[in-house]
Image (cartoon, rainbow, N blue to C red; front, side, top):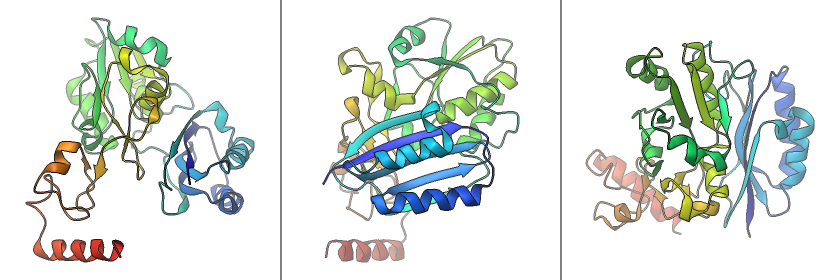
Length: 290
């Protein structure tokens, strides 16, 4: 069975979140929905899936309640259910930056369509920044982009403070998986005095869906937060797998390593796993294998 997948977000002021949480869960569950939606006073964010043909009524309900088509929606598919269950969680922010001056409902950077992105990042005076975390950037990155080496998105503000001076840096272009982190990051940078801040509309996923591989500036695959692990051009399922021991994405070379044991270890965690942890993971893997 194939599954339809939709990554979505919208920055919009919301109230009475517990009521909205219950309404969404009650409506979506009968359609076999899985995945996670986050609700916060600033909007909605998440990725959900359902058996082929069953997802559209759920999206229509979210449009009725939240106007999600005014935000970003990106459709793809999976060969098996990419999530184990369905959750609707209440949060303080739909993407956590912990910088009150970053308010995408009031001000964001300049959206750049995927078709215009290559020309923008080819400009000599553009600073291109990947706003994702290190476990994501190691799977793929735009040619020439700066990797801030952040472990969480909340560290992005520290990176800007320590490395970018608005008096010297005039033009910044940013990107992320689906566009949401860039909206928050661009709002933050504008509040800090940066003059021209651009971000890729729809993120890497929209770029890979839109731009042919032969003209693409993307190198590698794009990490996604479900069982597919990564996708490539055309949003086809990629070759990466996830290490259960440390949750790091593994490329084909990692999978050939003697340190890789399915469900247990990989080259990134083999030296840090305790014997008790290894025994527990092997026992779990044996149970999963039947």
